[in-house]
Length: 352
Image (tube, rainbow, N blue to C red):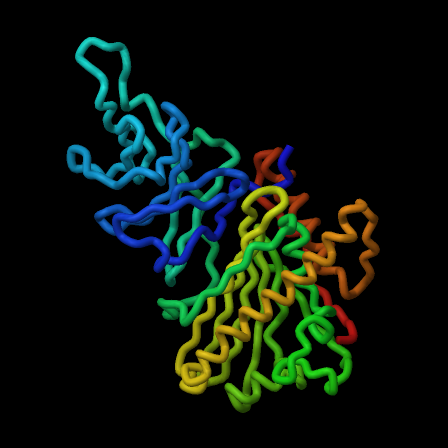
């Protein structure tokens, strides 16, 4: 049985990736998913397999059928509604044949598009047609368009990717650039207050680490930051002062049991210096993800032997919380009840 969480919203694509009248395939939770934008400008997501002869629908085209936007299969021309997955037309049928196109459907994944990103809802029931629960709220506000987006595919399980994402102790060893955590800065005591939030937790607003040279260079004084995590795999960090705001949203989407897509979406407002150094920021952010990816590859060399991993307090408490949240989510689905966040407010300390 899959260990991947369902009945949740996942990041699927950026708005810019979905061009009007175009489609492409992306694997999400082991499902081939067709992502596209129909000729009316609406994002949509369907299972990318025609129920007739299993040809990928993404190889077809978008066409209007009796005033409805549909995807036409390239093999026999069957057409499916972009917004519901219901078959609207089977061209080969003749009068009197006992088939009703409207009784055939391809799985439809609800979508939500906001702030330049597109989320899809993956239900545990492939046949469900009701309205999904509300999508997650990240607090992006009027940050309408990302300044830049980068992504990488890690050869890692969703769990290992998430645990690596939230691990604070690796930064001075893996990300020890001179402008971020130079080796000369040494290790310092970190003490952070954590509080439960929805399906996750947050580090309460605080001043960035004293050796975060980049923040001081870009924002000046009065800078504070807040970091949040939410199931299934969203982490966002807000860095701001009374004048400027930087928002980094990192989204983890499992392609399957052993591969995870990492997408980092960066926004800012009223930060002219960030605009000026954007050509430098993009390769720097890519290098950050590449450094994590190289560590994932190294870790896989050890994981190939199925070792036990020793998690310690306080540095690995967030990893333990993540697994606790997963267990509670799964149990709440099985018992058909509301999710109850098991995290308690606490202060964690570590050297980094």
